[in-house]
Length: 251
Image 1 (cartoon, rainbow, N blue to C red):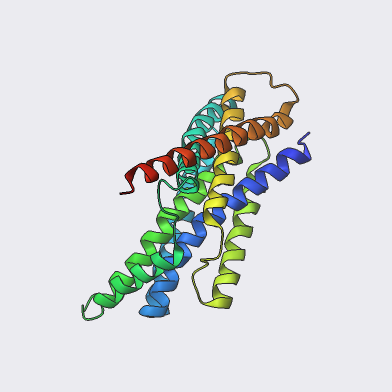
Image 2 (spheres, helix red, strand yellow):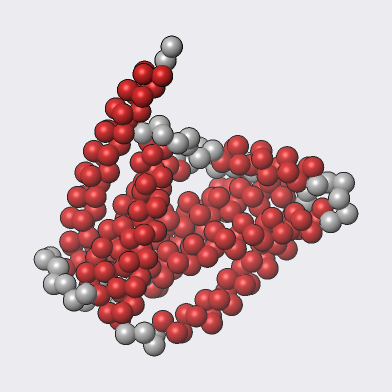
């Protein structure tokens, strides 16, 4: 029987991970719609969603043909790599080594690029292509997140629910304010999602290798807590190192 802890952690990981990706895609769609027109924005978005749906319909059934342990191990390893990538960036941003991601800056850059293309006869095509690429690239990551965190028996539906809720929230908020969601604490979200995805990855890799986890699904919380402690220590150490480096470089 599936525990409530597994269901909640699956929905939460899928929602937060998808939320970050959808916010980034929506920023580009909004830039296309406001600076050019909504027609190429909707066409590009629609075509990308159709392609994503086709990929899911084609490759989705193939997952059922893979032995569950092989699937868990493969997804687990990929999830660890994916989660650590997000966690690494979040740690470096929190410690000041790299700049925080700015949706307003990304929106302005995309808007300027589209305005420069306004005189081009292919302006509508290029605007639609920008929306298409944004939705497709971020959508592929959403699909991966859903499949990865929903790798457990009966969890794919819950993971899909989390992703669908994230899409709905971003669309409603974005259309309501007609501005990039710049006030969303994206680095904090990526930090949390990195922890969640890495925790799931470790758990599924162990399952695939036949590990007998103490506490079964509840061990995910223990793995999450341990990773959080290590991450916060890393941020503290890097902040100190960055501050010392900045001080040393001062004239």
